[in-house]
Image (cartoon, rainbow, N blue to C red):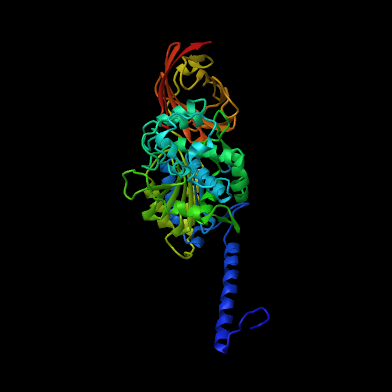
Length: 520
């Protein structure tokens, strides 16, 4: 025995074995520390790399960028081994712009919930939901609603009566919530359609309750909590977030982020909750996502499962934050890959995931491919150039309608009037709306492209791109694109003397008929 009470090994062989084991422990610790240092951490900015250096085929990425153009993407970003291997922005969307991420918001709120659990601000996801709102007189609080837990909200198995289908049908209950004066009260008062935990049902109201619970448990606005615990450590400095009438950040939608910052969220999950040596969210929480058990019942093969705001495809080992009109964060751990997409149209997810996995199939670096790199660069440059839509000859009505104020009957858009000047050297429009805010001003005015190319300008915090063309002698097609929200609104305006009929449609599936009368 030595003076510390330790017994030395009795043979030289044992001594050698013990010494070797000690070296293994030391080298293992050094290797672990080295691994953290070797992993690129894009806190202050992403590194870029040629695709082949990261085992990705440039030609496959060029095809992917072309696929993005056909699929009406606004941006496409692919990261492998922690480095950007391709990044495309489809005009008029540009680098450095935020994009509304829609239901990707749920995955961010889910991450914040995991952080709150790790920090002890939420004791357990098994806490009853109603305990967080003791001052509210909740309708139908007895019975199965009393069994509702935070975990049910995180997995959208609350059992609340809610109609927000993952189809082209209108999200009726979500729209009702958005029109209500008290979103939290609206959700809490919903009747129960089934017992909590019975089955998955898509429900942005569940997520608004999670945001409200976060705000109550942490004593912070959800955006401020995100800034302190998630965004700041990851180097995310540019975010906006819609709030309800009481100032609670929308839990199911309404967050806007830059694509590069969306990729940081995915990279955090790829690194299993670690960031530059710091534990941001527990590995157990990451496993909750990576081993999701709730069947989304989409009737598809392979099956989709859900947990904590993330969609998973176990058969493909793919994990996705998914927002309406294909706002996506895609994490493929087997490929050490993260991809981000923003856009304007839904399209099948599986072909995109398969393209990404196939592009990153190599386990080691590939030979340099100058031709493939040149083609990829050409496709990225081409994406940044807006393609002109066909235009016909101007109508003689252009001079007649210009300068008049077209006043609309009361309508759901809140559009009060429209003034067009299509004969000026720089054609312009002016639209006046009811209400208004900094994000959506009462009056929006700016240039109009009549050559098939939109003209962009700032409208409050938004960027609006507008173009118009004549579909005949009496019908003007007016297209306005909210660039950083991925919303495209098309109005076919048919003029009949001093009256006009408008067929309005948006890429979100909303259609409307409007009527206006001209005044000088």
